Image (cartoon, rainbow, N blue to C red; front, side, top):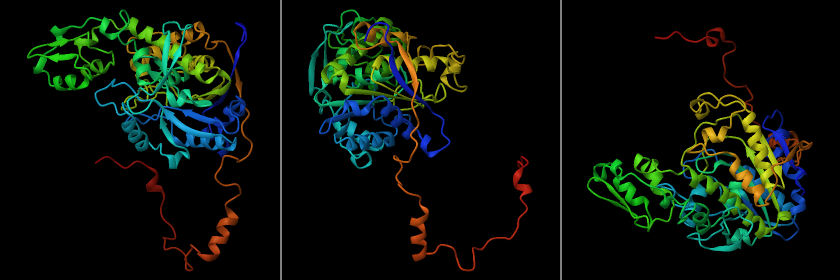
Length: 447
């Protein structure tokens, strides 16, 4: 693609007034328009990559969308599986740090093989070190990356993304879903700048004078948060053994106190944003550009990611569904439409002063330190992964019921059943013949 060429992003809005306008149907409309058939050959092993939600998160993508994609892949003669990788222990009670915990969390959230029609495979294995190394000489910051083996070895990949904010990446779109989500645990340490002399967490300063030591009610949680014994709590302070720290971020989210929150983390977050784009490129190199499709669902647009064990109120109204073959273009399109949207009252958008159209929603409401929304996009352009130039094309709505459970009207089926088992009593139901509806229409007086 030349510098002036524009990638096509297919779009349908979130409104619906008919069964053919369900977001499930619209998702398939944009997927078909973007060429889902072109990336899948009969017999292919097809990964469907998504985030299946943290424990007690409620904004993650509903399993019904995934089931529809699974059915479509099967129609094309391929073998689908649903996948994600393990995560770092970035919070004290993170529930996806090994394959067992992730499977239990996924099943609690509705992602079972019975519901999806396909197996759920944690791509980087039990601990997160079942991976494939990819060289990245073109990376903005990463020169290598480690991708979950099950993802690296699949023939085609459909990336289904919940578009929303993110505390570290600023926003979570297709680039983040691939860049972070397809990286093994080893790869996540890499992109989070583990042991980096300038941008890593351990390169920053902390403020032990702010710590109350064992007088703080959270001191045990701080100790338990660290998997490498890098924290030592004294009677009245804390010692951080930086040489041991691997930069998993758990201690920062565990403490949420001035001891660590006073660190200068901005450069590290910005570098990690560029690394997310480099990491996404590694997956694209492993699978092939012509074998990947990106679908963004810009609904339930929360300020933070599905990796958090709660979901705040949406900061903007639902936008709709997007699909593209260009990972950078689809995220840039979603960012632009989110920026144009008004923020919602009684959300973080109101607290952060991001109610007006034209305000960058995720720098304001998502990022911990107001990191620019442009970093992932620009890094994805600089490393050659995609283009920020796009044309928005409204997909044609699907005109029939091919994605409905029923292939014919229900009347004839029920007529046959009613002949065997009639539901209306011969003498009718017992009800009053007439009531006064007027008193029911008005608010009752307060006592």
